[in-house]
Image (cartoon, rainbow, N blue to C red; front, side, top):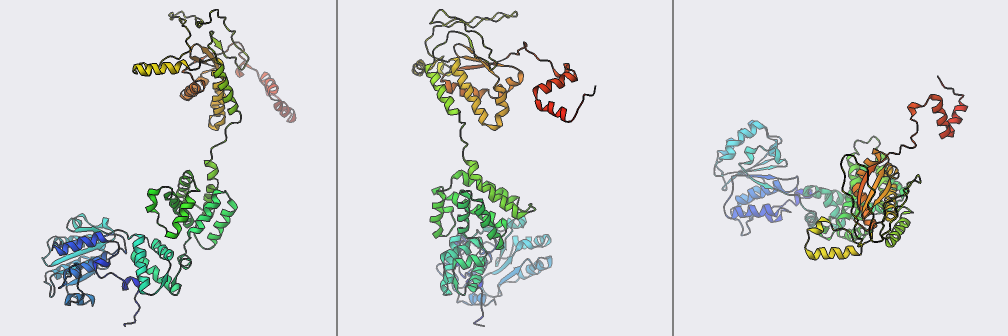
Length: 593
């Protein structure tokens, strides 16, 4: 029996508080409670599987019954109670598996045993594992004893699902929450096991095992035993990823490089080789998302502590992170997250994975800003030349329309005055006429400037004295430049078509009236008003104002379709489009009168 093989999870199970891995906040509290004799009558240990709940319960039960507790508040291991505990012959410590003993009768039997005092030691300890499996009736039968047990009875409950415990049970226990064991703590423990077993283990291999265990020490030791048997005592990184069927970081590094250069063929061939080895597309998507997360963490120095990779790979991650933009990483994470969520609902999962990779290939191209319009730079240069050479205008000028209709300029005899706009006939109520003012070459002060202090007003006046006077040519060029911006934006094509028919009318000193042919054009102008006004002011370096007016030209109103006969309508369609005439002759059509 001495040569019987024990798995590492049992062989290296902690026997003292100091050997418990990754739960120092729990062990320190329990040791202080023993030292000060402040033991509660009921404890509840909660947490994920394999983090030491049952182990700590056994160590606590052994320590409080030890006859010679050490100065470090640890069981001596040599007294009669410690020896009986180690040999599993103790009559004072009872373990109950609630998964298989969850009925009312099982709890009644436990309650009957509590009435008898311990034969050896000071306490009778009852460890109930997976306590959440007890039935509701069993919980109710256990309530009274759990609330007021005999002074020598201590209950230690353990569970992985705290939310299933009744609130009445929780209120009667001291609750301890166990956390997942960190990767570094698991790696250190595996190093200790490897040294004791005289095994050669690479750092990257142990780190991979720790990541695969997801904070569970029991799983990590089980994987350690499997790989040591597979590799015949030589635990290497290559053998670990092969045995655990894991995609290593080198695959994802090469895949990201291919995505950045948009090499779709290489990406799909690389993906095909991985899928042929038995990997699922979901595994590839999840692993690539984790790889991009690591690259994101390397972008910020403060996030370096969150990077959970082997030390030999950290340098490579930092180097690769500098080659990838933040926008690409964030967009890739968003795309991969959507692909993972919809993976299970995909009928063809292989094609679903391939399409996700193709989207990632074109992601870099989608994030690249579009090239500017070829004529935009030329128009900007022409606009700057016009604004520099502009001089004050003394007339009300209307911009030439695209139909070559313009109003003749009004002569001005005085160079230093600005002629008022022509009076409009208004039979309802006379309006105040425009009073000519002397041209000083400066802009008007805004309300914000008038509310400022005198120093700010003087500074604004000084700046305005050097500002450019508004002219029709400058406003028209700026308006044309704005139309180019709309033309470049594919979503604004309808707006561009309507605003292209607008005429500009200049009302000195700073008003631009936009003449629309119909209400539809006016509505488009209303939507673009704020952006257009800001653009024109910036382009002309003036504080111009915009007004809008609808003027319908009734001189050349064509007949509506309703007023035309069928023959007239057909002739008009033939005149406007020669293909209609060809179609009419080819099909030998005739009108149905």
